[in-house]
Length: 225
Ligand code: ADP
Picture 1 (cartoon, rainbow, N blue to C red):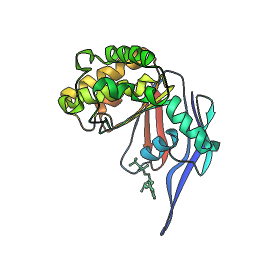
Picture 2: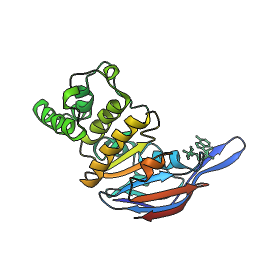
Picture 3: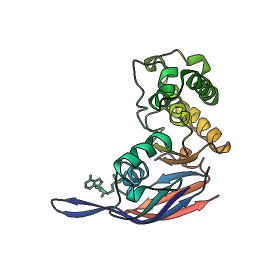
Picture 4: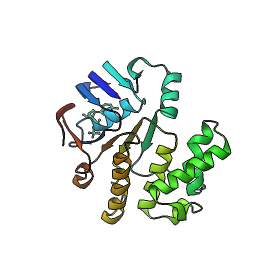
């Protein structure tokens, strides 16, 4: 599902070249749940940006769901982000003037799906993340955990093959983080999508059967329990 072969991203700056990542190879299967940990500056954001189709490698091969991202054009990358990918951010990125229901349905609306189809899919997603009773609420009426579960529902609504989550519990207290972790475990157990979570949290990393540690732009270790 995710295939990286010898991927390097070099940033040029005034003072010389900096390796964002350096010769990373990685394979993940459909439905696999992986966490990525490592100290600041080790290349986690660079890797996420490349997997998210937001950046191009300097060299190497990146394929997600059979799509060769390393040689994709802008239109292909836009289509990839819209149809194949779901992204979850640390600060939720919900639209404040829209309800939970509208936030979750928005990506489907942008794709031009029918209102009836969207309503049915949003109901499914609300049930998956346990927010049926909050469907008509606005983001400011929610706890942080509820906001993040809304964002998870939004990311999953379009049936993406790959979900990327960037520090998804980084802005939550431990109780809300635990609820978000429960939601990730449910998604993983149902093998709804391949899930990659970048995290500093041991609690989150310990949920994932596949654990990837990065250091200095490289994968230091990867093991699956
Ligand atoms: P992490 O997300 O693990 O903190 P990053 O991927 O942000 O790591 O950074 C990896 C390396 O690439 C660091 O040395 C960082 O300084 C460098 N880097 C990241 N983005 C840029 C950029 N836009 N320009 C120059 N160097 C960058």
